[in-house]
Length: 60
Image 1 (tube, rainbow, N blue to C red):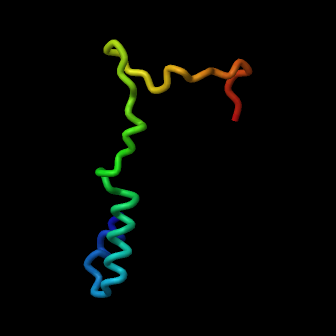
Image 2: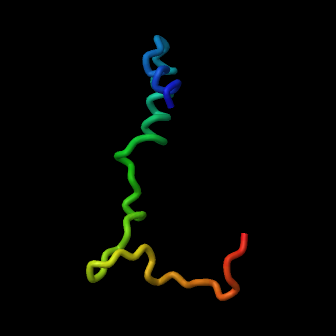
């Protein structure tokens, strides 16, 4: 990340734009996915109350 940030001061405008776009796309905090937020029901947090658990157990 430090090297990409350093490229934002590069004299070539195209390199600056590419570095800026990479940081915005992969490291920006403004693009949080709101679908990842837990659902709140009766003061309790639930990520997916309708999820089914496989009966065969956990497998890799």
